[in-house]
Length: 96
Image (cartoon, rainbow, N blue to C red):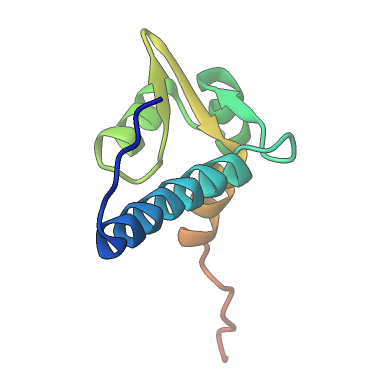
């Protein structure tokens, strides 16, 4: 068995980096739970009542997050909900 020794400070830095990597993985796993299913283009178009071209514009302009695997584009439900919240306009009353 080979034994490798490192300084205590270097070991602590290594542990800190490993903990940061673990925290990043844990965060990503929490974001894609069964409670946050993935939707395809057709489902999002129907939900937002927009065309595929309009949906593509939202992606191209960075307004709606997505994931792409080859030609397949998927959206997290939570991202579509957040998109709707950002474009929400509160009603106002007109005084006559």
